[in-house]
Image 1: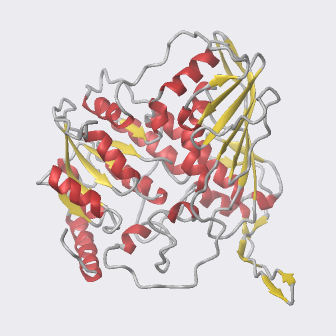
Image 2 (image 1 turned 120 degrees about the vertical axis):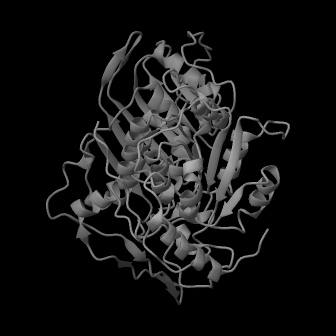
Image 3 (image 1 turned 30 degrees about the vertical axis):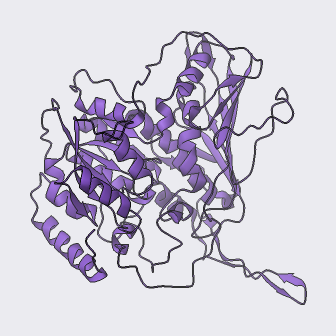
Length: 504
């Protein structure tokens, strides 16, 4: 791979800015013109291709035997960290000799977006919305890793942009394409466990550091890292390896903690099977709430109002409780002693009036505590290929007859709003109240005027002659209503701007 220096990164960034200033509106998504969806080869751009991004682009183009599908071509890949992504960049340069490699998605968009049909995004959480919004506005199909976005507004925006563009979309919660989620839905919809009024869920993550103070060290930026590109629309800060590539999930400005990482896998069966929409109430509690980093452990309680009944089962008010960081829900009385609730990283417990159902992370291995194995009608579509290939299928189909993918943004967007709200509940826990939510208006309705919130900067823990001492320091109190509004709709920085929210 070609060696590049930090100086060349900065030159590339300057050139990209100039290119964007002169780029026609069609490249920047200002035109609603769309190409025909009758394509034999789907030309794709990949943004963020280390880690999960590698799995996603492999899933879209590569067969189990390592050969390539003939209906996909990657024409460009971008990643801010060429050390982390080096193996993938080298691999795909061999697979697609004409592919172009970039340190900045903006440069790649300026040069290639008009030639592409689709985009796969697997960057840090805080850049999902801006990358996907630009692609959707340009009429491109989009696959985005979970969580779909970091905030409620961003999820609403991508949902509406996708609907307006009429393109194929998919969130990267791959369990949505699995058999377990289908069975859970069919069992509940057939009335096998009765009415569900309570669901408890958990994950065994985080597996990265959280509950951290602002790092003191400011080491030099590696030559292989485009730090400004990683920061994107977040507030600028000095480089430290604690932020990237993997640990971004534990920082409020870049990630959503264990909730955003795993709830998209664990709670999808809950959202889908129970026909959930907007919660009416939410509250959160955690280990010490730090100003910059997600807590080590947290629990969140959602209350969803009753929904329209299904033919064979009613959908009454339901309370969904989430735990992470080592916290576990209380065990069902019928669960045999010694049996581990954890299935592949977490589980959900559905308490019904007839039976109790447990389903694992990624929707795996659902079972009833009664031991029965229901034979419910198969009403859910089965995905024959992998999650990424199901999205490719949808991209290539005629939009007039397209069958949506298993986690199309029309479902993934509202679902991700639920998850992003959990972050709000944790960060507003200092209000010491249950928060009431107006989903249509995307706002909390009962935060008192003049209420203030703050969070911890340092715990100041020391031991002197065996005596522990805490000298805690906190942020200045801020207006809770204003803070909540910015948690729901972030204020982008460094020149990044989201498009306006399309109206229904």
